[in-house]
Amino acid sequence: MATQKNRSLPVTEQQVQAVEELLSSLKERANNAYSAGDAYMNSVYAELVKVVSPIVQRANARMARESQAQINKNARELREKERSSSVA
Image (cartoon, rainbow, N blue to C red; front, side, top):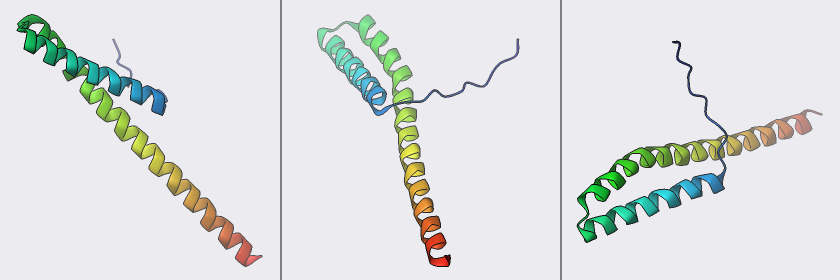
């Protein structure tokens, strides 16, 4: 079976925030399970944190790249506008 490259879906700041809250909640639950002495649930939450944490990191990095790209685009547009007005 041929594998397809996973295409990224557009991500909003609200979605990133929701995933960050999920990660925070999982970490809190893991700590609560540890405090309660529940080794099984602690290990389950630890596995979930291992899955969600890289997702949050990638989403944050993507938001930063998109923000920087927009700043660069705006600066380029201003330079082009300045060039065209000084030539005319």
